[in-house]
Image (cartoon, rainbow, N blue to C red; front, top):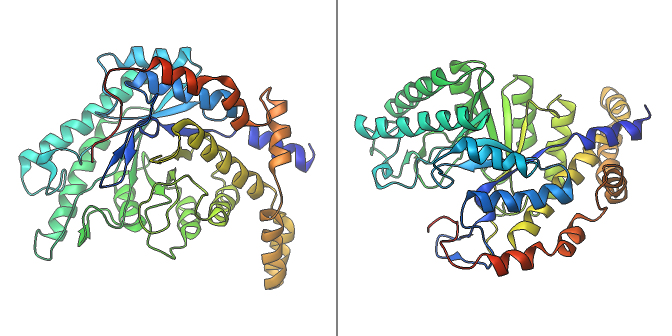
Length: 386
């Protein structure tokens, strides 16, 4: 197989998971902006996700968020997804939108609140059993706003105890993915603020626990690709939540703020052996002012373009330059790949997959946007409150 053929083959195997909540209404801390045609229930979210997969060919799974996507029959929901050519992906817990969690959830000082949070997490594992999902994704808003508000070490003890109980409930082929965030909503001390804290907990839990890297959850200037390389080296990178940030947790389309960073991350993924089923490539975005489905299509395409460039890096030439200490040549090898216009290559790949070369154009021509505006009238639109 030629080098180009190998790159094409790798691109055809790519899978990017889209989040159910990205199809619903969202906004800022000040206002949620409603759009016409937004889904009103999980099935309509899946119907929109099927449009993304239909035009990209690489978005076969959809992450659920509980209780936002709560239904009476999860097996039936999984069957509905299958009928649409999709599968249900990661199950995301929610321990941040209940009044009881004002001072934390599984790190809370009150055992009753911790029990309530843990029961929810165990419910999420039950849902995994019903849907066939393999990943439980945990993000905790837990933390403190003021020095002395709570005991920092005790909160870590409570976190470890709670995670251990959830970990013990996992079945064969299931794993726990722990996400970190350095601030917000806690401003003084977040209980899982960085990759090191997440890694330490996952290491203690065992092989089924891995770290999730949300690309928007870092301080300015953080070398995210170093984190990715290190977690891959340790066998502890479970997946990504792809989005972009300018200032904080902006949840913009991935690659929008810094496409070069996305390329650098994807290069480390490819170089470190993380390009495959063991590392989940998920989007975690809120499309506040742009149309939902086209924004998600664009995000998937941005991941594809960064991946294609990463796959085109001449790793042999790069290794030679690195061994010889040729700083400029090593950098040039990376930049040559990054500056390659991979859109014609991806158009070829899509054609070979039986897809339209232009996913955005294919979606516009499908008529789906007008169809859902006309049909989705009445009822309660999906979204999160702010």
